[in-house]
Amino acid sequence: MFEKIDKPALKPLPVIRYEYAEWKKARVNIDYHIEFDRHYYSVPYQLRKEEVDVRYTDSTVEILFKNKRVASYPRSCKKGGFTTCREHMPKSHQQYLEWTPSRIIKWAEKNGPHTGRIVTGIMESRLHPEQGFRACMGIMRLGKRYSPQRLENACARAVAIKSYSYKSVESILKKGMDKLLLQSEQTEKEPIDHNNIRGKTYFQEPLNI
Image 1 (spheres, rainbow, N blue to C red):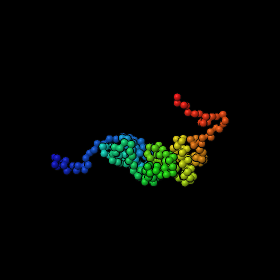
Image 2 (image 1 turned 60 degrees about the vertical axis):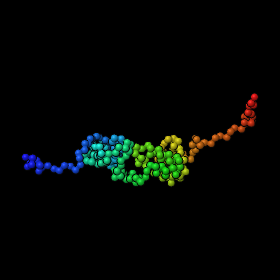
Image 3 (image 1 turned 180 degrees about the horizontal axis):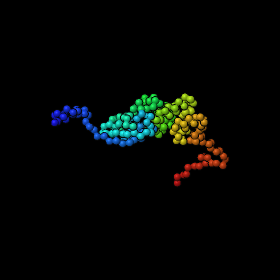
Image 4 (image 1 turned 60 degrees about the horizontal axis):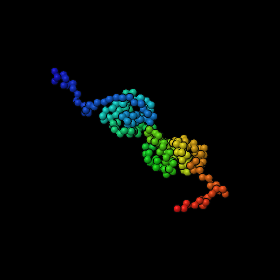
């Protein structure tokens, strides 16, 4: 019976061995990444804030939306790392792919140390550094609109008030607050010269007896 009925109906064994998989739900963050096992994987940016299904095995991570697979990656063990697909990024982010955080910081520091600190602060405040690239580029363009020195002064004031954002630096420049001296830069008042005030020549070193 096996030879006549069962064996002819058998199909070849799968090429890939069966791999046990588990499922979980995840919410897409505003940076179009989902978090799984403390690593971040991208999905198409149009799915921001949507709930997706994550199918994961020891070697792969698959992401599905409404039962349709939208991304698949080799599973990463890098905690806090990002796995990002270029096609998932908005065009406004894709143009910055050739840039890295360290490259942008070095570029900003050429304008001045405070400009570098603002750019660093902007990227450190984002979950994903690419989110801060656009603001950093905008800050550097302010140097062309106003002047590199005014930009550096505005960034110095923004650092002093711990306001690391493009809007803050732009507001300082628009209001001309970059032209005002910071309190730490205020010149000291001239010493008082009066007959009743004894100078250093009045005092003598005590004699050693």
